Image (cartoon, rainbow, N blue to C red; front, side, top):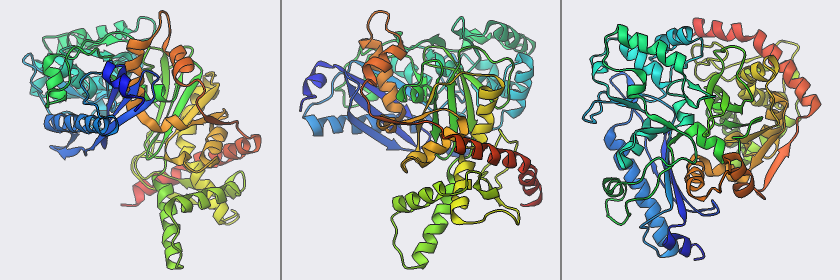
Length: 530
């Protein structure tokens, strides 16, 4: 009950994040300690050839998530939630939501998962001399223009999922700079949409006789710590239909899940980064300067305060690895053994530690789906060895664990080795790190830098968003976000850091050279196997 005064005084912050399969709300106290939560499971729909969520999905999911948070507060503390100190919204990255002057959604929400904007992304990359991924908002817009979709002439406002929710509840058409950098390229110096690129895109809009310019339809960019509006009476009633929540609560800039992940892992400072490893894997490294040229393997985005970030995103990480673990689980059952799943993972991962540093010549390709980094167009998982390879369980598991980080290493090596990017530490989070030490040490070997795991990393992006909301109201004069995180959120937090082992590094390098040489075999499997 020690949290009750925080709740009654409104000395709290609320973060809500719309993930791909779950919406989660986390309420924290003034010390950023989670004190209540709520969640709602949802799934995207494949309708009319696109992956989407409806506006009703968004509304119902948001209201159910908040209702469960509110019930959690009531059950734990006997308090009806009527006010919080600040609120922040986050969501899965980018995508395409466009509205007309009356605020009507012109076409169904197109999520980041849609890959129909490849042609537009390629053209824009050439036009801007800047890598534009197909999931970015500007790529979706340009693809709609190229396809002569009739709605494009009526666009008055383009935003992302969290930008839409924020606008709905505050009336403010704004976006956090981290998410803005995945809508349209941002100039790290001005902290605004890149001027030269907006001029170039404006020419396209004019040639197509569209009645707007780039700045006319994009949300205003705000950095972490800036006030992004307040909850309106309509917004309060929308979020809490029971009518208990008060209007007037300040909101921080809405951010994408990449930005909240950086916050939740204390990785917004230059020369730091984080790796999120689950079904897919991505690394985000905060840069000290711009790269010398664009690379298709590296997306350039920003932290929530606008510092440049190099992002390597890979579609595949643990899915193939999980399949092998499940197969060994089937064998255990056949042998009459009932081994809990967590123990099965531990046994097999620890066995992988015993393997030869270079996996004994075994090579695994974990491409359950296509992989941009390695130019694999379709999912063709492959396990390859020569007749001289040392084929045993330890090497098999080590090869599949290495494979989970292989494409990531190829992308990150461009930054770390070719571009000489400085990196002091990486914070890891995700399912592959649940077994003590193994995934952590192999990632350290892959990247050649110390890897830290923190207990709080499991709190996720909703917690990171709540921290950004708290930063809005709790920051001291001149206190930067990285100072706030270092001194007031993560100070004294438990964490385990492993430095790379030199022999493991050498072995991973030998593995990756074989991995690269064997990629034509995977591409042949794409062509030869249906």
